[in-house]
Image (tube, rainbow, N blue to C red; front, top):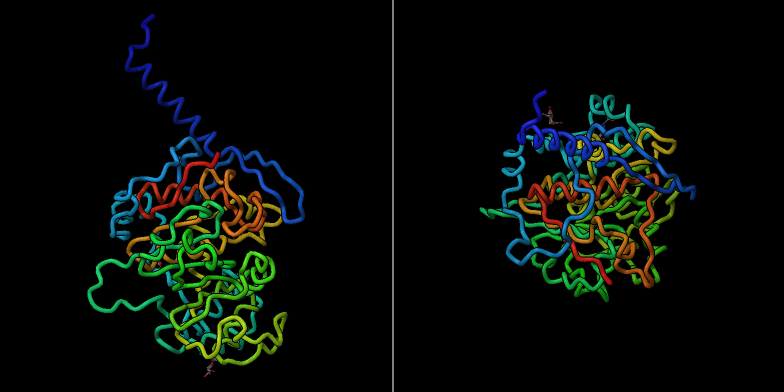
Length: 381
Ligand SMILES: *[C@@H]1O[C@H](CO)[C@@H](O)[C@H](O)[C@H]1NC(C)=O
Ligand SMILES: *[C@@H]1O[C@H](CO)[C@@H](O)[C@H](O)[C@H]1NC(C)=O
């Protein structure tokens, strides 16, 4: 009998490795449901929309030298040149909503999906009157591209504990635009997270919860000022009502937030163009193409949506030419506290409404493919 020549052995080994990588690469997913039960899920099925061959661990986490800290300023070309990314990204999907979207045709299409993916359950007059208020043409764009600014550089700052003691404040502020989310305290953390805020992303629910939960950490108010733009994530009717009240400069007249004064959150007399509203089609696209989590098929699937940080990072990737992500989950997340502003170290807890493990693998993959640059750091002792 003929023995297998060395080339054949190599090929066989390669096949075995590829297979085991495919199987084990998607094996573990443990999370805690929002009611506190710990569920250990062993998933053998590969989720259909996950980018293949994630690195699960073992990658050196040392920060790269200064000159490797940026991706080339050619985000869209990078995507166009990469067949896998090309299948995921679609820069034609509208990121923001504006009055042109409130038509009967759009209503019929979007009322089939509940928020944040559509308008199901929302009265037509609430949607139509809210969108009508976004009448400033600048409401439909994140920023103006004036003159030949060849490269718009954006930093998206998540609230991860990895930023505590990082000294990244200067690097973050050096970007043209800085995105922050939810309980984004800067006071007292300037060296680590910077001071600049261009965009603040939230849902009415996460904003109000952050003001309560992170008050002791110093989050006393939402960032305010003429230079700040607010990005509402329309996860509920509350967001349409709060946005309408904010633009009208009048208290919220109905629903859970009835009586709230928008000036408490957004300051006195903000301009219409400071308010932006994510498009349900964009959130649907982010979910379907990048974060179609197995959680969607489970008991609390209806609660699942990409995290606020994920939606802001995706917003930046579809608007800027170069994107850096700070304070986002990395594979050594267990070594850091949940948030950079936590007074005592708290572990990051996984809930059924977000899939942070999947988000973590996505950022790693986009980092490897040079679509974004992800801030990483070696584990603390
Ligand atoms: C990209 O998005 C636009 C707008 O939603 C849609 O018309 C188009 O078919 C999409 N293209 C691909 C290749 O998915
Ligand atoms: C939508 O709202 C605008 C502004 O209030 C109004 O002029 C228009 O008639 C409304 N459209 C429909 C179809 O209700």
